[in-house]
Length: 38
Image (cartoon, rainbow, N blue to C red; front, top):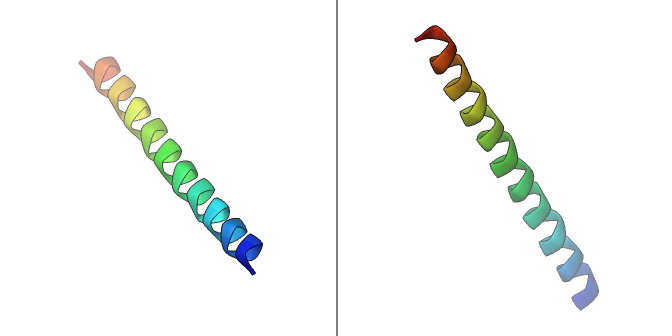
């Protein structure tokens, strides 16, 4: 049972990491676009 809880926590942590990672990519992309436009 405890192992299952640990797996769920690992999965949710990984999902959060992916969300933060994609948000960072979007920020980088929009910053690059701003520089190109200016």
